[in-house]
Image (cartoon, rainbow, N blue to C red):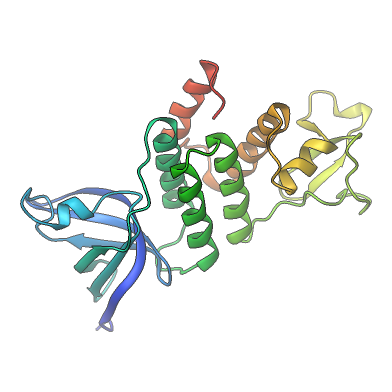
Length: 244
């Protein structure tokens, strides 16, 4: 028989919710010490239940649950504090981060660095920082936290520091190497664009666009061929001239 787990007032965020039976929901949560956690919130679809107002994305929560087996049962939830609200492109950016976490995280694998970079990104979105820059830094930190960090410091072939005035071909699982004449049509970047991403200085439009292209390619390795739903919406918005 599986050992019974009881967790009290764990810090967390709700990432996704879906109906379960008539009045309940299954909720996917990012938690500080237990990582991606799936719980049943019994009766949470009833409009008069206080849980329904609290179980919303992007709110910093305190969650309590009991579990024996894979699916736990939510026993208590409260808001830790209200920091603000997301709207417009920041809201869409928040849903993109949630979907990215749901696709990349293993259930029950606690990762303080993942929790921290998500929390920091939400705070920046709530003060209406540049959405595209916030998402690129989040993607970069998320890859690092999951052990897939990108080599943006040295030439993968020679070990020499990346130079701003040179052009490089970037291979996500190796890093950057100097572009050669035979690399016609390869995915290449100016060294200054790689340095800008490494130092998280993404004020320049060209550097920001290069970062989006590079990180999208790197993430595709771990996401597989099935695209993120929110990523497709973001791409439509970009096509309309808004850089996200």
